[in-house]
Image (cartoon, rainbow over all chains, first blue to last red; front, side, top):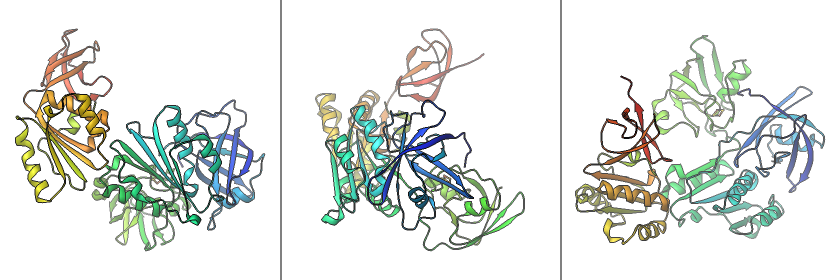
Amino acid sequence: MVYTSRINVLVKKIIQETPLIKRFLLSPINKAALPSFSGGSHITTFIQSSGLNLQRSYSLCGNPSETQLYQIAIKKQAHSNGGSLYWHNEVKEGFKLQISYPKNYFPLSFKAKHHVFFAAGIGITPFIPMMLDLQSNGKSFELHYAAKSKIDCAFYKRINVLFPSNIYFYFSNEGKRMLPEIMQDQLIGTHVYFCGPQSLIKQFTKKAIDYGYPKTSIHFELFSSQPKLDAKPFEVELHKSGQTFYIPKNQSLLKVLLEAGIKVPFSCQVGRCGTCAIEVLSGEIDHQDYFLSDKEKKDQKTILPCVSRCKSSKLILDY
Amino acid sequence: MLDMDHATNKNFTFVTGRRKYLLFTDITGYGEITPILSSLDEQNLLYMVYYFNEFSSNHDLKTYLSQQKMGTYIYASGNWNSIISFVKTAEKAGFTEEELQIKGIGERILRVFCSRCYAINVCKTSKEMVCQSCGQSLSVSNHYSRRYDAYLGYTILN
Ligand code: FES
């Protein structure tokens, strides 16, 4: 992590939004107000208790102008590696924790004439403050939101109340699907935003490019990087210290380095922010990030170890 | 306004993967778009060609451009005055630098912001100039300010 100062907060209220999603209202401790934030921002939460050290990033889903409370919504994941289960099972009202200052890797385009949001499931969270921002500035937008059913649709009522028009729901139990064709006939000046599983982001991004959207008009937010299915193990050598490491197929290079006590700065852990970048001296990088440009990827000089791997058998890092 | 240097290509490059192409030109610029026309014909792509003066006002042009769908790409060539006015209108309609290429013909009039007295100078293409307001020698940079619609003129220290 890039260790910036943290804010002490307390869980003021917990609201069960859907059978699997809880909303947590966080209020500041010893502080009059929380920093204001822009739509699309997230915070990292730090929980340390009985040997547990959890760091998880969540989009802020409340009103950006509200500085007495931050709101995050967390879905209980079936294959959680601790984060969502802990939040759901252990965190109660009155629980104290630390959070980072808000950061925004998913900002609204200030050039867009019209914003089209595509959310799947818990992917709705960043869009609520984004739409509130746009609404208060009189800007044009529409939301397309897919969920399993009305019951599983977080913020269903709130969204209907806050945004009376241009909101479209797609419930799969009613046989409705959110399709990328919605992007096809959008007028010039449209920017599209995707938030949901990686498969949806890939599918919608590809379609948007096929329709002729410039890459700069396509925005997306990843909550977690999906492990590469065909990932292979590889070896890494640190040029300065001469240390070598084995990176198993189910672990990221970043994780292996951090566990070995090597203080690589990091933040998003999904290949979006570029914080963890390390120079590469030799070896063929298997880029899996969404941060480096096509040219930088082709140059094969920089790796983002939180997600990227190695095509050859060994990488030598300038570290 | 869009950064002209960013959007200006020495020679047009043919951009594939768009659904529709709009070509805007005048007598002076027509020669520049002919290679693009050939590529579009060869690849059997959808396009339309317009002369700038076919639109009776910028308002009509903006209305037309605003009705275009995402995936539309513009090539525009002609005298600089027409190009500058066209680009301003295209931007208002929602087109970005990634959705158009321009080629100005002839002499270009630049707006240059004096970093000493903050006056905006109007001059012809040049590397150096003297600020008409304070007399400072300026080097015309390629730092373009959308806010001032002008290039930054750095003071030259003698
Ligand atoms: S931590 Fe953000 S790109 Fe690796």
